[in-house]
Amino acid sequence: MSAPSRPLQDRRAPYIMLAPFALIFLVFVAWPLFQSITLSTQRTFGPGTTKFVGLENFIDLAGDPMFWIALKNTVIFTLGSVLIQLPLSLLLAMALNRPNLKGRALFRLIFFCPVLVGMVFVAMMFSLLLQRGSGGVLNRMADQVLESLFLYDLAGAIFKDPWLTSANIINFPWLEKYAMWALIVAALWMFVGYNMVYFLAALQNVRKDLLEAATVDGANAFHRFRHVTLPAIRPVASFVVLLSIIGSFQLFELPFFMFGGPGYENRGLTVVMYLYQSGFETGDLGYASAIGWILALILMAFALLQFILARRDEGTLE
Amino acid sequence: MKHRHAIMMTCIYVTLGVGAVITFLPFLWMFTSSFRTNAGFFDTYFLPVDADENIAWSQLTFTHYHKLLFELGFGRAILNSIFLSSVTSVIATLFAAMAGYALARFQFRGRGFALFVVLAMLIVPAPLLLAPTYQLMYDLGLIDTYHALILPAAAPAFGVFLFRQATLSSVPSQLLEAARIDGCGEFRIFFTMALPLLRPMIGAFLLITFLWSWNNFIGPQVMLQDVDRFPLAVAVGNLKGLYYQDYGLQMAGTLISILPVMLLFLMLQRDFISGLTAGAVKG
Image 1 (tube, rainbow over the protein chains, first blue to last red):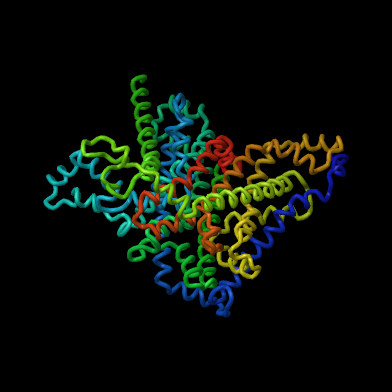
Image 2: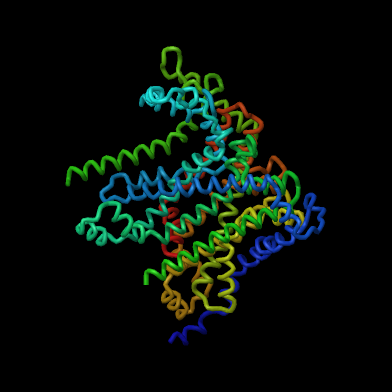
């Protein structure tokens, strides 16, 4: 047994090692977390003056149209991120995972780079790239591509009054009307390589012998993916989906700088932007905390769901 | 069969190539834009051309960089960012490494509870803590100081989790036992034996926290008031409001801001990507 070695271990050592983290955590993380509960039952005018209002903040939130707009926008962005970004990430990872692929490290490096750029800086770039009219780089490039593929001519030949025209593409109002799509595009550029790295690591768990056996048995590419690859990467995939949902729900800097605030008709308003506005522009830290708690509860529900699904998966594997 | 394989590989290279070009173009565009004046900024994508359709090198300018550094105080903002991110990342990594190691390799009372707290913190969204942290810093008189930013970041639950995983997988218990039998003190064991073995995770987590701190906008925006204390994320954000039409200037500011972290990443990238996925794949 390890009995003789135990006394050698200094009993105080683990506490001393844990102490710096634990002390700072208690004062600057746990205490604010606890305080956020109290704050959410208060109406505040800056940090100085507070008034107890009970659950009024939450009741007000339920009837606050701005909050619902923010929540709707955030859900749209999250769906866009998960449904568009993650399949693309997986596709890139599978392409990079081909044996004998040359330049794998370089491709991985290039795809990963955008995530190093902070949200603020990505917003600075994309607010220029996605402008409408002659200033919009993306629109002008799209226009040239569509023109060279004769798609305008095709649309003109099929429809009497085609929407797909050069003028419409050049003036496509990303930052005005299609705010959430603009964000999805910017986030796609930023995060596709980041998620790819997770999938690439997960693909190392796929057993090559099973894939080969399936090929010998005549399974096509889709069946091999569905029955061999997918089950093997599933734990990581569900983790990546969860991370993606958590990150998407906390979207703030990207719209804040791309639209300079909530944008045209509040189409760029997100939950955390509304939290920021309530707490630090209006000065109601209590209302901001209430919004924070709604956000936290939504994300906890997703985490719980992922946990339950992961448990169930483990059960079916036995 | 061989023919089909070749077609498949060609498709893959084309897809990856197109993806890489799309990923790279915004960087190139930002780089060239930062040397362009507003005159004819949008006439061509990357470089200005003269009447003969030749590249007009003479129209490129360093004025944006000059203005940022010598008129708009960006030199100060760069130093602020470097200071804030370095201090934050070193403290956070040291504390997380010690706590993670303790949770992985010691049996002690309260260990289960500490572990539970660390795991539970992983799902608390940061914006929830924004208002109460502001309130706390106000009460402590720390508004408009770097303490308000560094202290909350010095206790990263996520980091403790990562270092616990790393310790479990790469610091063998037998090694520690042997060192104890040789009469080595616990802290000497940690600093001279465990830390070197945890080096990949240290590199990864230093970079994660450095990046997080460097790119953090909402924290400094809320906690700081004095312009002289603003880090790059806030300084660049302000360009958007103050120099709305000055595109070249905005891109120069953005480039200055992302260049240092890009260089840091290129130095540490091997550790970084493996450390990033370690929690997910082994966890």
